[in-house]
Length: 114
Length: 113
Image 1 (cartoon, rainbow over the protein chains, first blue to last red):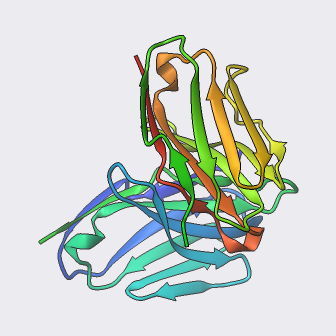
Image 2: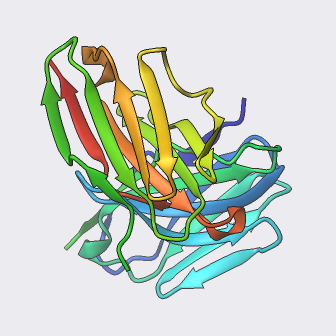
């Protein structure tokens, strides 16, 4: 069974710090990997999508990397702001035929202290 | 452009009642997914459709759950009869192609008492 693990489960840092969220997956046969943000009581907002052939994607202060061989992805947030406080979810789309559903990690709950 | 639309946003019902959740995918997207989120299990895929055809329903927990997609712009997830353990947030997502990522609706928070 494919599994996606996110570490740490929770993180609290002062405003302005750079931080890294980690995601690992057990099966390297992935199609792509997607990072989402979820605010309390809200839906999922897609942040970055990395195809299996790519090494990283950037959007503003966010940078996501992918290392398929080691089964890892990281989400780097530069110059964190209180508005970045949310739960960040990593999700993997595996390459298996017909398997189009995402497999999610449990998320990292991030708090940025003003 | 409108994103994925789900209704209702909140549903409170009594055990044994029928519950119907609704989803309108993003126009032009040909794949639609139903997920369930709980504190214990996180987000899990229930079922997905491609071009209105159910492809994988292995995540549907029991026969009490059923899903339909009568056309490209509408899907329903029905629970009959509902039980307290069905309480969760149910998300609908859509995509246009595998490489394009999935886009999620705001979810329906279901509480079964």
